[in-house]
Image (cartoon, rainbow, N blue to C red):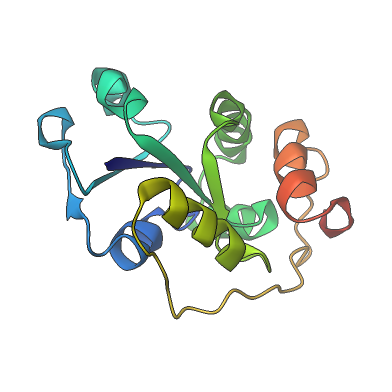
Amino acid sequence: MSVSILSIPHTASTFVADQIFKTFRRAWNAHEFGANTVFAEHIDSPHLEKIAGAIGDSVIVIPMRHPSAVTTSWQRRGYDLAALDKLWGRLRKYESALFLPVDAIDRDQRLNTISNVVGQPLSTDWKPYNVNFGGGIEIAHSVYARWIVERFYGAGTL
């Protein structure tokens, strides 16, 4: 079984690919997809369209961090927050995927579900933690990020 990790930049895709799926062989293009492979790509990558067929046949995992934490990361790097907002909206295309919020209390329960789907034990010793997500970063203006927060973190963490 192959796994495709699709993500927004700075939402833990490298962590998930390298730590949680460490027993899987890394696939770098559609020709390398196969049993026990993991492919990771950002959802804004132009390469995604080229391998859409292979991705469609794999288990899709979406790593997630609280949108406030991601916004902070993007701001620190000087990235365009309007582009980030559009990426949150793009994630709706993958609502049926297996989401893995790495910084949420129920992370291990979600990881167990993913383990059952891929048929292999997956684990990590990295402890999930909940912090004061707000951190002075206002994301309430982001219509797109709101559905992520409400679904995975609770509306009270906006």
